[in-house]
Image 1 (cartoon, rainbow, N blue to C red):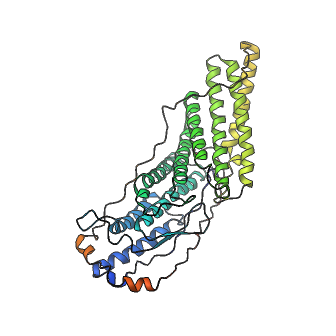
Image 2: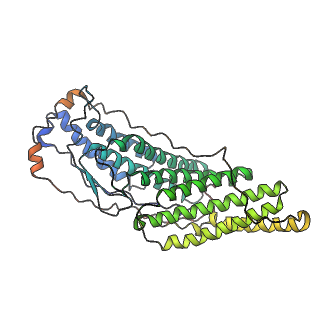
Image 3: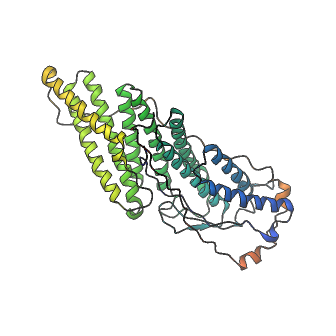
Length: 410
């Protein structure tokens, strides 16, 4: 299943020294600043380390966020803003906007931008695991969970932290509702793909598979519609991927619904359902070509080259031929002009985001230490000599595809 998922690039950021000169007025305050710098650098390294796994990522994330919250949460016994929240400028690029960064002097902006990258990492980890040869059941569960964890992070940022920003996100940037909603929905849809693959592998009831495929197709359609007002140059490629996946899973839904209809002796309707599956599959094939030719951010998936994609084409053809034979010998049903209405609700296998919570505040961040940060000392000198840090693109590892075994599960 290598190259099955489209992935937009990681966000890039400028280095942050957390050198506050005279502002940090005690050894404990200086240690917090030093630890912020080292834990941030460590977390950024993990994004491109191919040996990193969810446990390592969680530990690195918790280490940084437990300290960063000391610059966000009120620590003086009042409900006023933390005095350190607006002391440091942070620069981040966006997944759809190339190497042009946004900058905000706000620790909440740093929190949501870094957490966004953590969520992107989980989607890339899932894609990497799914691309392995002979994926085990445990690894498939890791793929499934990682996608739900990513969805949970995106959802938490949207609901809780992004509304706290003083400066709202610009259009087309990662933190604006259309973009983050599309990421949430895509993660849920891809998690359900894992469930569908398992249901097919274990030969579950055709009704269950059809309902799950239909729900998944609807998720992809919803994600696509969420992006339809974005600038085409930054969203067209992503949207082509969402559209081809929507058609692919509609083909699955009609194919397995056709099997259900045949089992219920509704052969004419079954034939029409399989004919619609053929149409959807053919359109998905065409969109795969358009997707490959469309320029835009992200890695190019190659779904039409995967056995999981190719097997569906064969299954539709075989099932349709069977229905037509049965109709010619036994049923003699008229084939309806219109395809059957797919009004199915999946009772099982729907992917819900895993709730995301920030780690507890670091024990280093006490009210006593907080009181030793003095914004009246060193701040003026710091502003007089601003240092512009360059934002360098993230060099992501180039992973070679492995032999495709045709399914997400072995």
